[in-house]
Image (cartoon, rainbow over all chains, first blue to last red; front, side, top):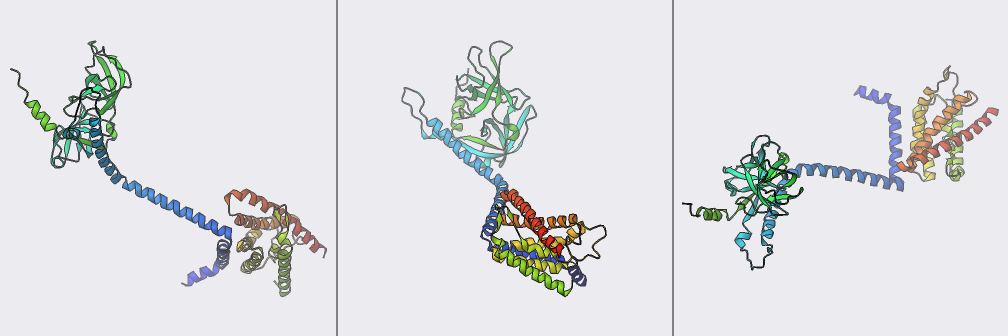
Length: 279
Length: 169
C-alpha cells in the first residue's frame, strides 16, 4: 500500500497531466456540437460493425443447420419439379391423361453423406437414413447437380449407396438434344469422367450436349442430368461413338444427396416379374 | 521562482488573456494563420517552474480561452499537452553548459537558435493538436497541419518581436 502510494506520488506529474487532459477531452466531446455528433456517429458505427461481425460468426456456426434445412427444402422442391414435369402435357395429338398416383410417384428424401470413396474402382457411399425412413435397396440417389448412384443395402438407420463411380454400375441414359439412347458407365479411374456407350456412329452427337437419364429407366426418374459431352471419338470396333462425359456430380465435395422414393416401383417390379418366361 | 517574478507572471497572464479574447479572437490571416498569444506566459515561465504548477496554469488558461472561444476543452487540452512537453523539450535542447545559471527563457539569455527552435517546437505541438482536435476529421488533416504550421510561423514572428522589446529593456 505504501509502495503504491509512493509510486503515485512519484508519478504525480503524469497523473495530473492525465487528469487534466481527460477533463479537457471530456469537455470537448461533451459541449461541442460537432465533436459530440462525431463521437456518437463514430461509436455507433463501431458498435454496428462489431455487431455485424458477431452476426457473421453466428451465421457461420448456424451454417450446418441452414444446410440441413436447405437440403430438406430442396427435396420438397424436387418433388414438385418431378410432379410438374410429369404433368406438362407431352406434344401429342392423342388425348392423354396422367393420373395422380403417377404424377406423385417420385418422392425425394434428403440424406447426409457420412462416408464416400472415389479412389477405388468400386466406389460406395454411406448415407444417414435407412429403412426407418422408408428407404429400400434399388432406389435412385441423386445430388443437387446430377446422378449419384443407387441404394445397394439398408440397415435401420443407414444405407449403402453404389456410386456411379463403380465399374459394374451402369445407368440408362440419353442425349438431351437428340434423344439418342445409350448407357453411361464409369471407366474406372478418373472420378470426373465417365463414358457413354452404345451410341451408333451414324447418329449426330455434339460436344457440350447434356447427358440425362432416359425415360426407360427402372431406377432413376427421367431427365436427371448425368454429365456433359466433353470428348468425341470413334470406338475401336468402328460402329459406335466413343463419348467421354464430364460428370455433373462433384463427388469429392458431396455433402447432401437425395434418395428418390419411387412409390410405384413395387407395381412396376410386379408387372415385370409377371412377364411370361421364354420357353 | 521569487514572489516578484510570480507576480509579473500573473500580470502577463492577465494581460495576454485580455489581448487574446478581446482583440486576437477575430484576427486571422487568410483563415490560415491564427495568433495564440495566451501561450506566451507558458513559454516564458521560468525554467525551474514545477511541471505540476505549469500544467495547472495551462489548464486554467486554456479553459478561460475556451470559454471565450466557445471551443470547450480544446485549448485546455492543447495547452496542458504543451506544458507537459516543456521539460522534454528542455532536455532535448540542452545547451552545452546546461541551464544552471539561467532561470528565464529569453533571447537575451539563450542563443537565438536555441530560442527559436524551442519556440517552434512548443507552438507546433500546441497548434497542431488544437487544429486537429478542432477539425476532428481525417480528411482535414492536411489543412489542419498547414494551419498549425502557418500559425506557428506567425507566432514565432509575434513572439520574436515581443522578445526584441524585452532585449532593449
